Image (cartoon, rainbow, N blue to C red):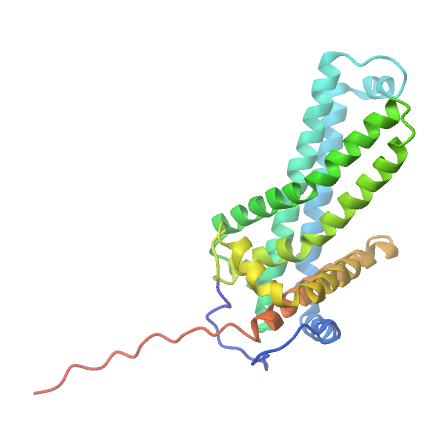
Length: 285
């Protein structure tokens, strides 16, 4: 729902603005605490879904292989083809399940971020005000492809370095380390683009295929500041892991609201929703 059709109930940012990370953090804390129950409830629900998927993978492994076979897999014995197939099935279940839950976490919490940043109160149902599910699935696929292409040079260097190390080449270690550095640098470098892409789709400014170009035009004038903001948001999101992961119930929503507020900053404020034209009554004779 592009910016939402409901009118704002709180003041919203207007006019041109540069990226201000401190302001984004302050605003995010205020908005999150204002509707803390709704945010915590939604985040807990998504975490529970992730736990269910993980436990389901463990149950699938036990029921498929049996406890005695699982113990055997920890030894040096060569696993059978059936055991290997079952392991791949379990890994696939865990991977796909967690990707689906992560997608819903991103989309639903971003929707909540748009609601509060655009000046509206957030209730539990606010997270589900989405009518672009197909485009959002598409934009996450496009962003995954772009991320993979971006890190490809570093990945190739890592493979070359590992091969050289295996052949006992003296330069192999240097190439391997350099490859990891390039891989990490490219992965970080592409993050501002892929983080903005879903928001342009949710905001109704681009389709999934248009989002890379639209997002690049938005972040290009302030790319380095946007890169710094993306790193800070990622650190804040992960900071909750220091409190036995319980803190992430707070820090992940906080990071999402920050992300949307920064997006609104590079746009220059809240998205204006045009009112429908007033229909004039027919002349009376």
